[in-house]
Image 1 (cartoon, rainbow, N blue to C red):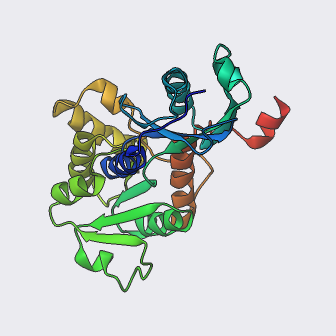
Image 2 (cartoon, rainbow, N blue to C red):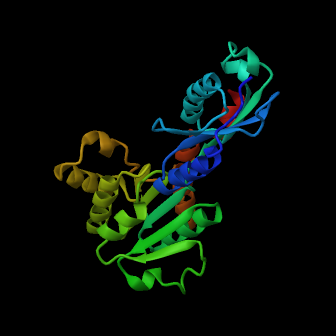
Image 3 (cartoon, helix red, strand yellow):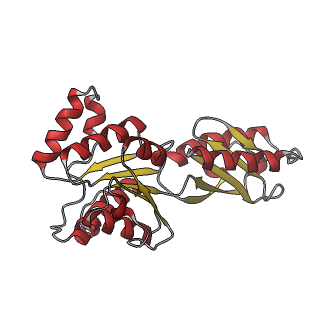
Length: 272
């Protein structure tokens, strides 16, 4: 069994991992965890097709590349598989097992509007592990005295567009909730968000209010397919009343989107 990774493989793999996280892209890290030889060998397969590292066996690397693509299409964080399950022809690796791990940036939530709902949403998302950026064009609404949590980034946004575009960045793993106080602010934030193309965009408001904003965006030239992807009104229907409950409904929809959930009652799922 060939198993001699090049000496510079580890350094290249480390650089590739850093590049994936910096770019906000997606990759699968594969580690040989059980084998006659080569235990600990790692290969990084990026969703764009690039790879770094090697097991020392080109045939196994090729088989892992195909299985890594299938793994990334799921929403699993990790899975251990026997090589025999997906590459039975590789007799030399018949007893080997490999670990697939999803590599992606930490989930980020950008909240446009620091009113009652926006403030509650920022705090709740931070509590469950999201990196949060909270924007508002009223500087006193995003004062550190209101949000002492160090994990919530505050961004006064006198002109929404630039700050929102910077906050979204490359867009991978980024969720945007537009919860401002009026049509004009909604429209400005939505234009910037849709242009930046994050993974998720949701807008608060009644069907009438969100319909008005979407109609304006349509007139501004945004394609219908993109507008259909906007969650408006944002959030799952849980009968929310208070700002905190509305924030919970919004975050529940974001988590469902991220994890591939349906939003259906768990009791119904268990009966199925």
